[in-house]
Amino acid sequence: MGLLDRLRSRRKDDSVADNTWLVVGLGNPGAQYAATRHNVGQFVADELASRIGATFKSHKTPSRVAEGFLGPGGPKLVIAKPNSYMNTSGGPVSALVKYYSLPVDRVVIVHDELDIPFDTVRLKQGGGHGGHNGVRDVSKALDGGGFTRVRVGIGRPPGRQDSADFVLKEFSSAERQAVPNLVSDAADAVEAIVEHGLVAAQQRFHSPA
Image 1: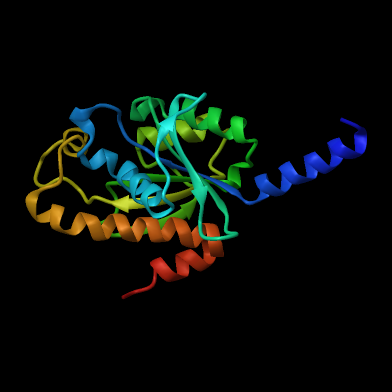
Image 2 (image 1 turned 45 degrees about the horizontal axis):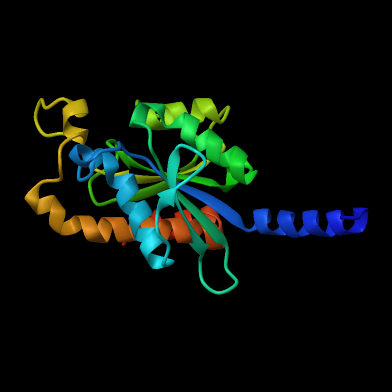
């Protein structure tokens, strides 16, 4: 391949990269954790993959990945579910960022959030991890918090129940009725970030109903 061909190829690759977003749903692997509150980020990843008609497959990085486009001519989504446990999410996310040569500002991390009421979605870039070990490890692996976060509210545990136990339990029967709408809202939020930017998405999802 001559120099001109290489430059053309590089421009083509760069244009694809410029239109690619990495969306990671945090959670724990294994059937025993699949339906727990801590895995709600992966519920959202499943919803997004379904919307774009993609299937999760094993990957060269330690994650399962589904790829597709957000509508004809739209941005490319790389949707990932790390194979690691929550508190070691940073390694898989860092590997994905390097594999796809993406800047951190095109990374969206979807995760459960105790400090937000159940059935609520909030969006932010960076910020403190608030004791969330998955976010803490991702931030460390990416040298800071420049990535965008879709925070899916699961609320605080009732009474004196320990937070660590609470997040590893399944949603209550009453909550399960609302979970599909919560997951759909969070998936909508990811799409809004990708298509319209964080500020516009925040204005939509942070405004009173």
